[in-house]
Image 1 (cartoon, helix red, strand yellow):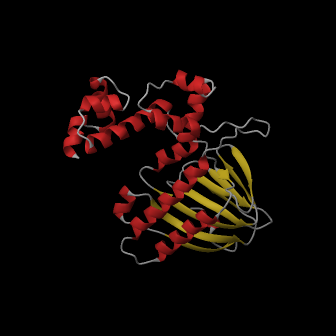
Image 2: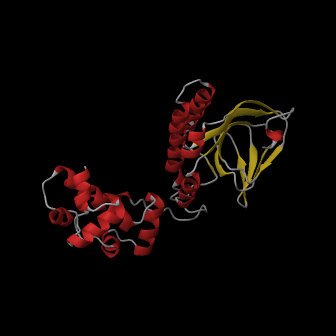
Image 3: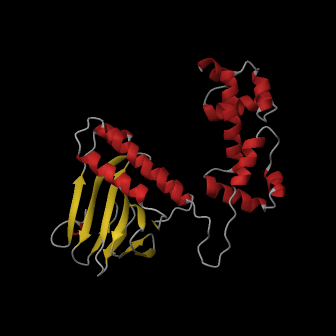
Length: 286
């Protein structure tokens, strides 16, 4: 770590460097460090190749972030979410800032961060409210300082809540640029699929019904919901099929037809591909 960020006469900080259990390091998203600092002098901090992800928010003052080939001016209320394996700089300006932060890591964080970026998540963003983020950071600090014997699980729970907030924040329906047109929300398309999953639904049909170019529809649906239209339709059909397999006496062929998959062999093949077992095996197990 860059000692300049935390030591000497550059900052005043309250922080906890946390050592998770071997179980947490191997299986959970786990905390590495958490705290709050107040800059005493303007300074620059740089890190790279650090196996960590960093979330911080600016409570007061201002500064600058350089990350992934871009620069941002940071002001009160701004939040930052970074993959610390990539190099970054952040520096306090003369208007000395106050930050709250958490460093964390986990075996699946790479995929989570890539999904965040895929959905349009930004390294720097300004949420409508900081309350949820502040509460989570406060909870994490308290847990890290506690003697709770299952605190790694509780920390995992709060870090998951933080990542959920970040995912909610990540979809940015407006392309970069003040003059760019606003993208249309596709919730109505999703609702239509939910209501008509048993029918024959195609990209062309949805495109015609909602007066959208099918390539634009396909791209924006995935950006907004994190899954392709076809994959989402299959999720809905398989979910309803599982309900019928568990709570009805209908045959497997009837269930496939009721869920929009009229060919029994196709239904069984797709079901096994998604669930890892055939419809009959699923019914027997559950």
